[in-house]
Length: 572
Image (cartoon, rainbow, N blue to C red; front, top):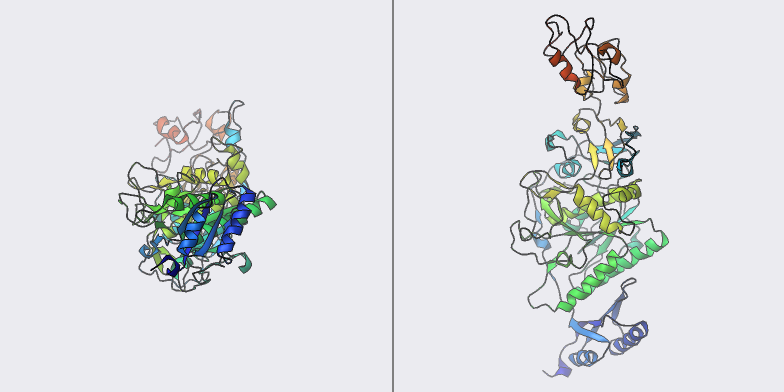
């Protein structure tokens, strides 16, 4: 077959990186002479342009002689591995959605640091509300599991999260299909990125995109329920992948220019691998598209693929481009015990993987509540955590107070540091798993009551909100309600210190309740320590005062006291 009779093919026309504006205009004219219907994409920040032209072999050879053209390469199809995401056993459910509750948390006075201390700079006061679902799945609860060594996932009654819930943050969900059947808070249709061949604009039956989307603002299983979702239809061809990423990057830059405080997250639960012998110039242009995306300070969250926990190599894109785009957050998957599941790739000791999230049997907001597995469904959980941080009314304070803070650090780079720095291993043998920064006292989410109440102390930059202890239906003695050390003694003593720690909580002081130490230690009865120490006949002073570590109570002969529930009156 002669060159003239060979069929036309689609080629990506790649200009030289140093192309100037006039040269770019001339090159655009040259390409359009060959293919008047050639498509083009141009980045706003990186200043590069690509064309997709339908060419004969001779057209291709002629264009390659142009000094302003770096390469003319076929528009290859990436080897996607979405098929490795699998359907797990369905988790039946008859609930329409989680019942979420929130109340306002008030500030408690912070401790005054010494004059030469930097604690005050690092403390971030919180006045945000904390919401929690009343029937959360473990894949959500694990995200709000605070780093408390003595706590277990079973101790958590629900998923707790800041009530701002990602409000005002736009999350661009890049997927090979668009399924919005199980999502809420969608951007208007005219803001979607779907106008591209060869995929159809909407495929509601495709479960992958539906589950990915529902993990962020889903009615039942969302991590950041108030975030706004912007669907982005991707394509398995190299040109359209670069084009869509570039279009999203341009949109984010435009919005940042209009409002420097706008916040953006991009979730990429897609991936492919380089076929053997792939021309490295493809990689160069995809890197430039991703850099354009990151230039608008967007947080980039990427699923790592599902080749297995002990896979000897890491060859999935876009994750393999992390050295060139270091702000990308690469997400692996764990089961609900915190162990690696089918997903996490990479050679031990090579830091490809940044953080993990539940990715095994993840419930989705489908009508039958089916569960799917794969890093595709771990990544949006991390994207949701990013939205929670960006939506915090204290975000700029947290960013400024964080260790090694820099005024020039982009949102994307800082949010990555915060998420990775906050992550912790849920089991000794597992990787670090994302945590949403809600400091939830286990009593808060384990109690039978669904009410969240109490005072919030000033927070460290690692924290987004403080979830104080909840009141049980029948208030027990204060000591059993977590008030030990801040409550008063027997009836007749001042109980203000007890109830101040739990507004709305009615603690019931008993004779056996340990007491509160005043600012100037004196005789126990003067410090409301009455009932806690006695030096009468046969008393065990050591046992009595052990209840007041740090308290310099001075027992006197006439102090009638109690040592605790086991010992009883000291004289006994």
